[in-house]
Image (cartoon, rainbow, N blue to C red; front, side, top):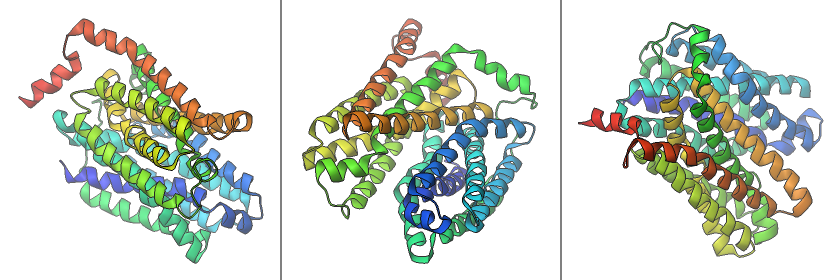
Amino acid sequence: MPRAVYVLAIGIFAMVTSEFAVGGLMPEMAHGLGVTISQIGYLITAFAVAMSAGGPLMTVALVRIRPKPALMVLFAIFLVGNVLAALAPSYPIMMVARVITGVASQAFFGVAISVAVQLSRPEVRGRALAVVLNGLMLGTLLGLPLSTLIGGQFGWRAAFWAVGALTVIAALATTMGVPGLGRADGGNGDFRQEVAVFRNGRLWLALSTSTLIIGATFAAFSYLSPILTQVTGFSSGTVPLLLVAYGAATVIGNHVVGRLADRHTIGVLLSGLILNTIFLAGFALFAHLSVPAVIAMLGVGLVGVTMNPAMAVRVQRVGNAGPLVNTVHASFITLGVIVGSAVGGLAIDGFGLRAPLWLGVGLAVLGIGSLLPELARTRAQSPTVSLAEERVEAATR
């Protein structure tokens, strides 16, 4: 495995830590900026919307730049956003800072994944993607508690200064550890060539599956804390430990999926969705019982967001490994976060705290349905493997 893919994971860890920082510092930020908790919540929404809508636009703006310089430009923009957040004298300035960091973060994901694909042999691309995406999993496991701890000890602005320092470290590591590369798709930066791949209906179906997988997972993840305290009955002091266990489950699941993603892409996605449906339904039915609730929660951690490597392999096979495809894919993933959290919140208002779990079940079932055309196509091509998987097998011989 090229060492450079581990370096790319550091950059993604910095991005994810910045994304989650607001969630752990909401009371302190509300007091410091003189606004309400709900207004601080809008900063999270703005970051997600900026990622989803602005990330692809930023990637298009960088389309003629080679990957490594593009990564450095994105590091610089992301650093500016975090410094602005640390210095923000008012809520509007903080909102601008979150939009800047959200746009840079999404574009960085797309370019970093594209670089990881270029650096890796075909037969280990799934594992390489898992390594890079471990930055996301470790951000979930460590980024939120670390930023919350720093913010609690030294003030919320210190958390953004810390992310800025981490960004500089990641940029220096990238400068030294990632080689210069050509464009992933072999193109010449022509915008028309970049967007032509989106005429493929199979690509849109693959993107939709990713949205449904992440939407199902985040319908539960977004509301784990209130469910575990108000329905299951855990104390507020126990919940952080449970969330760390959830984060550890995502790291394990990501490693396993990365090992299987290349050879069994559709099978992994189908199995993950079926298991997630079972775990989410079990969580909804037995949320009032501590042991079944914890088992179901950890199950969602194992087979939810951890499908990312298989999702990325599928999208790249039906599209390409270029930065724009990967960034748009990341936007569809972010759309899943928005759908799961926003619709889940509305469901709570109407039906109570178990409602987001049932929403997750519904989204997972839709995700299974979205895989059926690809399953039918695979069976029509070969009784064992798809054409793309045959190529991977041939590369290993």
